[in-house]
Length: 125
Image (tube, rainbow, N blue to C red; front, side, top):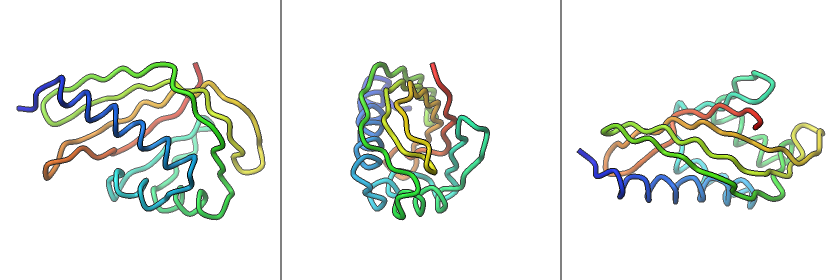
């Protein structure tokens, strides 16, 4: 069984790495923390597979300019965790520019000695 404090620290760092990679358009770093079958459900309800999301970041169709963390809550249960983060995110998503109060609910799993993000569901707060 994983120790909750250690897991929470690792997951917080994983969340920070995700946003840093998004802003820096570092899809290699982003890919390394996402499960192969990761998918992102956008605020619109569009369910985007990992490879498509990464290609949209690489091509500039999705550009994340800034991200300011406002809160993170993590619930760890063994090798599974739910992370709920709230960030103010400035982005240009498919030609729509704005600053959004973005809430991500991210499901994570501990596998082979590290945490991976399995899915994320975006909404506003």
